[in-house]
Image (cartoon, rainbow, N blue to C red; front, side, top):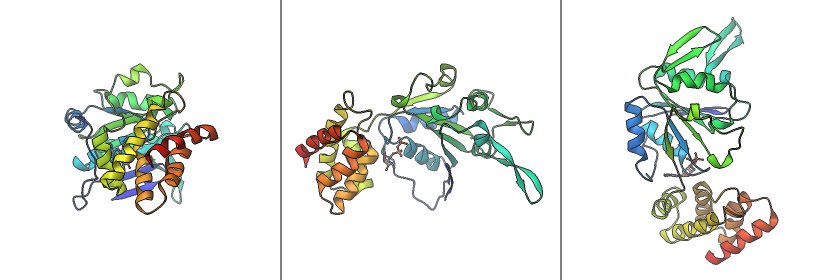
Length: 273
Ligand code: ADP
């Protein structure tokens, strides 16, 4: 079951549903399981669209845990995570935020792009992310101890960071940290076949093109082509769109706003399609 409310998505693992497809890249599944057993928080770093969110959703299902996902942004405050007083017909009442719900239920709280959140969020995250495992609810005066099984997972994209937004060492050092890269060729091809409906031949060509585009990343682009974009391209080519039109709309234009760079990316695409 999945429930969405604005930036917050809650997914409850359901035995009737198949576990969400996730193609392992290295030993991340075992690392996550061990961290969970030892009640340690996990930090995942990696470029956009490389599988961080999918991995966490997969692990929540595998471990049969409720998952609360929050996409962090620069207006996100501690109250958005913890909860706030609301006004209803009977007067004011307290409503738990996603972090508090996960803490009470022993679920997983996943904070995506954590470095985007306001700095006041670290005040609530620090005592939860070390061996105290407590969440102070300043507004109600409660000090919640996390239920067994509660796990804090955060992610960010090191490429986006600037000096102000970087994660402080005192925060980073509370987490077991995993670094994700774009999947290796064989793994990425499998993903395109399974998620994008690509033939093995198309999957192979798209992955080769992605590698060529990723090599440009250092010089001309902020980021290389993500696995997510390759899945879009695989879907659109498989349903009959012309491959070069798809390369423009699903790869070149999403990667750059500069017309000259887009033209250069299309020159690379023409080598493959
Ligand atoms: P991120 O959170 O890193 O921005 P996502 O987890 O949303 O990226 O990944 C984007 C899409 O790419 C997913 O919806 C999924 O279809 C696919 N994907 C990426 N990596 C994997 C993987 N290892 N196994 C299965 N699907 C993957």
